[in-house]
Length: 249
Image (cartoon, rainbow, N blue to C red; front, side):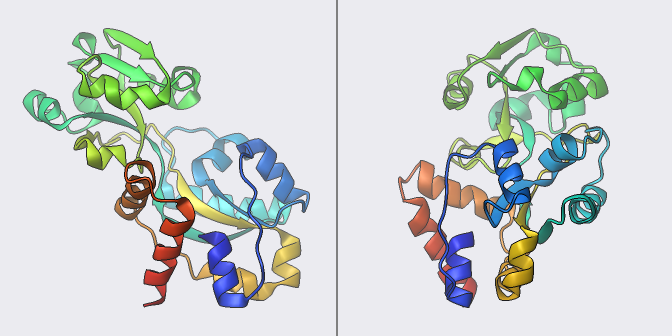
């Protein structure tokens, strides 16, 4: 989407690079080795700015990240795309409704009889420790597994709750309920388009083109596009092109 937006609006050719981890890609942007990439406000808040993950207000995090990236690193936030891809807890809709669970705080009295599944990393992350501490959760069992197996385990009723990313298309496909983080234990994860200072100075038209992506993708739209790729086997390039076509109408 980012490359396509740049080329369509400015005519400047863009080359994409994949398989770069968050720390590597941030350093590459900071060092001028790449010009643009998308990161998440919560990742930048915790890993780059070293702030506490608890009770972080979405608007405040966004404003602070934008200001401090510019002040410390001369990096620009060109756009907040509009969606968060935050950590979340998900349940089968029928089970959540049967137990009357809509929020993470509703799990408190039920957790000791429930099994939670998560990827190999989540139970060691500060976000999970914050969830346990803020909500006082103690599950009957916590199972770590490959992320690709989490939704299958939930469908098969091998676990009752799973950790998920809020824009995963399988939330739609499996008709899952995302539990509200009503005590704000999980930091916000707004998707942000970051731009190097070199590009902002030498190609201001590119920066302006990217600003046009602000607020264009909500969480539901992102889930639908993920379904188009992950479930319907569309190519990311084709799905991105359709999005950009619709954006021009």
